[in-house]
Length: 269
Image (tube, rainbow, N blue to C red; front, side, top):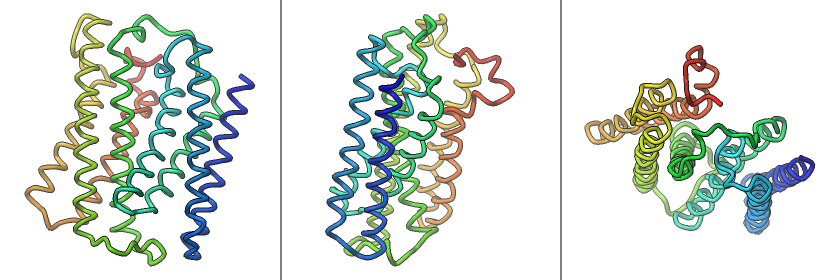
């Protein structure tokens, strides 16, 4: 427990420091600070990776089977997506959003160490459960980054975030591509979940509250593609829609546990 708290605190510190340096760089146009911010971001991700490996060795299983563990992977993958976007699209500000959200979820884990429970029900020991969780976390990270990119560009147009050489059309195309990748992983998550459910409970689908919300979320992002196809010019409408979709995604991830129907769910551990 002490190792966990120390490593989590260390990761929070590095993310905070990188976030602070990056904010200074944005506000004062100090390009030299960008590399320092990236360095601390990498060190923060390394600290998270060490923590994940520590949990893997300590629990003698991949740390992918509790809510606290999935949040750790999310905190690791989200800044990674931000850095890839920075390299590929020469967009540095998505990394700021990614670091901020990662720091938020790290803080939640830091004050809730009980979320790292080693005693697991038999249903979580299926071979299909790990790929089910992995592809879902990747999907969540990609969809979150794309939503933040759209929110900044269309609801928070600020000169300090201006990125030369990239027009709105290019950014919109990049957002749609990231959403498409996230949706592909979301679909794989549903399929692996059905296989896992068949092995664990004998049925591919039972309309459990968690399964129902997962299907609703999947349908919401499917509607987004139809929205973009039929209303190509209504960019602001699409970005508003993405914000609502992300809220539904978070409800599906951990909000379902707090709904009145959670007591009937076989996914509540």
